Image 1 (cartoon, chains in turn orange, cyan):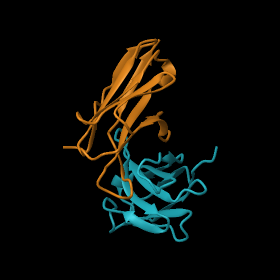
Image 2 (cartoon, rainbow over the protein chains, first blue to last red):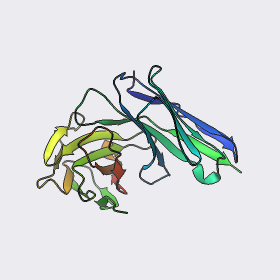
Image 3 (cartoon, rainbow over the protein chains, first blue to last red):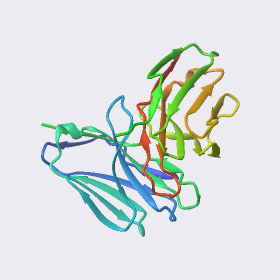
Image 4 (cartoon, rainbow over the protein chains, first blue to last red):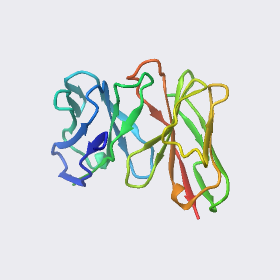
Length: 113
Length: 115
């Protein structure tokens, strides 16, 4: 079982719709969860981070964390063509003191006009 | 906003040659990471430094890869000899460290092509 798993997609949504990206992780002791966006040929950029169960909202983005189910998601409201990118889920495992960040394989999102 | 600096942006080398990448983290960031990203996959951690010390190099192919951060600031990643399978994006990132939830900030990466 991979440490961090994402649906590889591609996920295609129309402009203005809600895009839902999902991620599961295997280490129940994981404490910190991140979503990065990566445009083709570019490096990842941080979108959101979440540490506690529940929802965290930032503009059009909402991160949702359910530690009991070992599940974290990212919702993008009012999707725009500029949101088309690969979205990477990343998790810091709980078993290390130095914060090893492990990435999923990424989900490709396409927002079409 | 401060950035992580990496060079070169692109590197083409022949197999069996040596290649080196350089990274300068954001000032004050104690933790430095080197990741490798193969096209279509997520980044994979190669080595993680806390100040000048290696805290994780479990996925670093030590027969050909080496990394150093001698003064706890900038870092160099070396491959010798390069193999065709080393073609990838090499990403450097840094964080404040000291706690497990400090976000990582990435540099622009070095795209390596081995021919």
